[in-house]
Image (cartoon, rainbow, N blue to C red; front, side, top):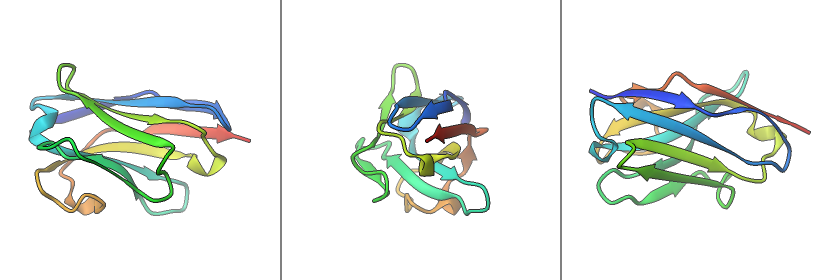
Length: 124
């Protein structure tokens, strides 16, 4: 199995940018489909972005397309989520997750392993 440790996040002004990291250990990230989700207070966890372990293809929620970029570094066994043009509505706890290859990427229930979560707060 894989263990996921997240870093990054914090307080950012609207319009700013940041990068979240998700370092994997135990198995390589290419063995999994990797996703990012977020959960705002009082809301359900929602899909943000994902990358296929097999082909490296990427997928995004419509609400973040053009602003969020997911990428993976196999040498560092780390997945990143780079965010630009941050908006107050991006404020949430962000989670990275790993799923066995070939799952439906936008469904949180399909992911088997989760990072600890990291808070992103965007001030207006």
